[in-house]
Structures are given as structure tokens and as C-alpha cells.
Image (cartoon, rainbow, N blue to C red; front, side, top):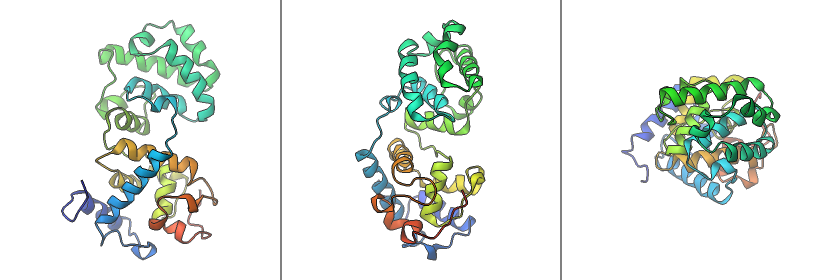
Length: 255
């Protein structure tokens, strides 16, 4: 549905702007004065995302187990390194049942080339807890997911969004970077832990299609709105709303 003047999402967004004392004069449009801007922003991002979707193997399913395993593997690890290990691992252990029955030594061997060996133990312990506490089912409730070993706020949000299409914000250095550039906000390494950024990114998620929105946001960070001072602004679907894109060459980032 188009977000109009009576939408509950727009007042929340306006409050985020007020709380972080956002200077709307930095933007091409005053988002607070034009309720349709948010919907146009979301639609442009989703449409771009569908055309530039990065079809990693864990993205071709809505299975929460597959998504959970992938996101834990991706923690502090490059995608190119994860893909072949993930594919072999999922072929060997395609679901919670098979992994919960795995021989621990074989399980560790299957993941040894991934590095970060502490993560291997966390995955093993996590699966045992899922088997015992949740009857071999990946829990949907966020508090339940966060109670599992190795599951961070980001991983819990990713599982809920990509498996069940729930409007979860995904907050990491990539999404903070895009948000900071769009709104002309200074960012640094600690910004992803800033509750003001969390509230703002949460308010931006498209409630009608959160899965597509978040995939598009991550792909934009990977392909276009890249790190440091050389994003490909001319290729960006959000350029008309972006303060950084309108003032390219001015640095609003410390990260």
C-alpha cells in the first residue's frame, strides 16, 4: 500500500529525524514534509534490487535453517570463501535433524577450512539447543533466536526477515554507511551500535516487502554504495534522495 498522510510509518520516521536533529535542508527533498518520499525511496530500491539480485545459494530459499547457517558462516568471512564450504556443508547436513545427529569430529572437519574455530563450536552447541529446546525447529521469535549460541542481533533479524519476510532492520557497517550518506549524517565505526541509527534504519524498512528491501539494501552496499570515498553514485537508484550523491566529494564519513 502507498504510504500516505495517515500512514503510521511516516510519523515514526519524522520522529527519528527530530530525535537525531536531522538537518532536512541537506536533503533534495524534505522527507518530513512529503509523506510519499519514503514510499518512492523504498520502491526505487526494491525495483533496483530485483534487477541486481545477487543469487547466493542461501538466498534461493526461505528455509530458516539454511539462512541461519549461512549468516553464521558469513560472520567476519568473505562471501567467496563461504560459498563452496556452505554448499558442501548443506549437502551433507541439509536440515536440523541431520546436523543434530552429526558426529562432532566430522562436523568440525566439514567447517575447518572456514576458519574462526570458535564459531564451529557455537554452531554445534546452537543446533543441540534447537533440538532440545525447540523440538528441532528454528524458532521464529526474536528473543528465542537471540538466546541461541552464536546468534547476534543482526543474525536474528536476518533469519526473521529472509525466512519469514518480517520487517526487521539489518544494522551493520554497510547499512549504516548507506543511511549516513543518504541523510548527510556523520558515521563512524561505532555508529552501528548507536540507537538513533537503529531507530532510523528500522523506520526505513518497507513493511510490505521487507525481504526484497533488505536484500536490495545489502546488494546496493556491495555493488554501488561501497566503502570509503568512491561509491558509484551515477549507478545508484537512490541518487535523487541522497545527500552524499548530491554533494559528492564532500566527506561526511570517518569510517
